[in-house]
Image (cartoon, rainbow, N blue to C red):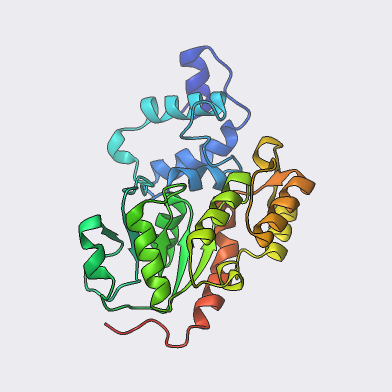
Amino acid sequence: MMTYQQAYETATGKRAPQEAAQLAKLFDRIAAGEVLPPRGQQAVDLGLTAHSLNDPQENPAVYDYYRWVLTNCFQPEQITELTAKLIGRVFTCANVFQTDLPQPLTINPWQVTAMRDFPLRTDRAIIVENNGVFAWLLQLHPDWPLINQSGNDFNTTYLALIQSLEQRHVALTYLGDLDSRGIQMADHLFSVLRQTPIATFTAIQSPVNVVQWLTLKGKANRQRTRSLAIQNSVFQKELNSLNLLGKFVEQEQLIATYEPLVTQWLAKSESGPKGD
């Protein structure tokens, strides 16, 4: 039986990329019927950058090979993966509000007023920058109180509810990409908060941890570690670390690192998750 690489090379006359052996592990998981994490997480788990399997410009040879194998070696129904395509114009969260509805919840602008005093399930929540990481963390830890930041989508519904949660004394901490844009997004979000201390917001993604993660897991890229305008001195310190080391880390690389740190942070809750 031909391998995926042999099938590709025979059919196309092109050499498979050097990452073909890594991708074979993913294809074997698809063939075995496994439920896969979002595609960015799949890529990082293989040692690739997060957009390698979604963006043809990120790594054209890998993307071409990956798409060819999916199209020619599998039926669409064989591929079971969590989607990162969450609605971006609203507020999406999990285990923050006290409800029997399935999680996560997506709240639209018409619901904001009612949600301002809707019963809470927690007094702590983790804001997650990336859709796919939000979806995968919820899959791995279905009881965690999570808020989806959805990248650079600072829409009015999202901001209204984030500020409302602050006023209700919900502690908010943040997890995002450790590249220039990721740090800038964290900085911008913090600038619109009204009551959250910077020590709480960076309790997990602290300057000390950022340096450690960049050192252990960082990938070299000057464009993704360039200087950008930053308002808060803590985030400036984190961006300086990126500049100095010339390395970035994507959220998807940090799932296993997050897990014990988030567990410890949630354990500090005064009340724990509020009952149903």
